[in-house]
Length: 54
Image 1: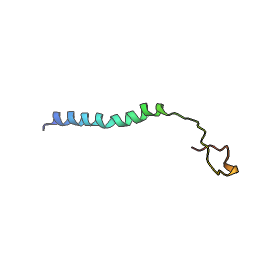
Image 2: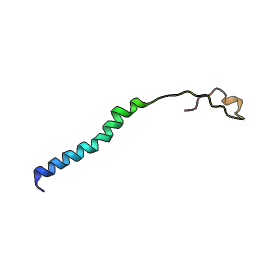
Image 3: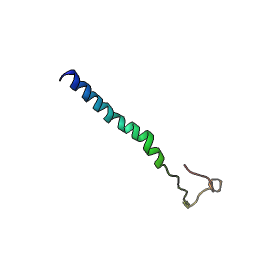
């Protein structure tokens, strides 16, 4: 393998390796969705009634 081929392959691997970081930084955070649902819990203590679970 000569120097030109080595640098070309190195650049390709760097781009392939950078894609997951770019995806997780720029695309996936915008899919975040907060949903509020009523979940009845049997025998829940009165102190915890109306509290939010995250």
